[in-house]
Length: 195
Image 1: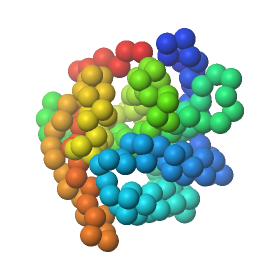
Image 2 (image 1 turned 90 degrees about the horizontal axis):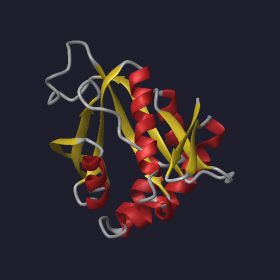
Image 3 (image 1 turned 180 degrees about the vertical axis):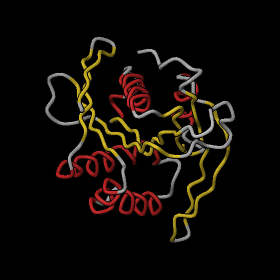
């Protein structure tokens, strides 16, 4: 699936990544994460998480489990400038009490843009596209985890209508944890993020 949208006069397109294109996600993560998490995580934890979460074999295994990965492109460029990964048909967080019985949710596992593309409106287009995919899949909500100290991402999520619903500490092995907030947005009661 591909979609094109405009963002501050930039054409943005989203293409589902076939397995042979997952290497782009690995490459992008290694370029983006040091900027995003360099002052939040130790160099050792950063390397550990990149090697674990973005190994091509790990991404392929996630795809086999129902994760859908997309690459983000802008007009005139042949290489992606970002990526995201989602998973549909999950149980929504219990904190979303306004959802009907049997409702499902979409989890946003990954959503990243190159540092020089952040703050340009592309992120809003990306999240609008994710919301549209979630609605098409029948999801009543979207949710994600964000590092508690990733202040710029937290501000962005709150600006586009996400609400913090809980804290979560996840043991990821080797003595490391992910110290996160969980943010969610009901798609029944909130409009799509405006681009």
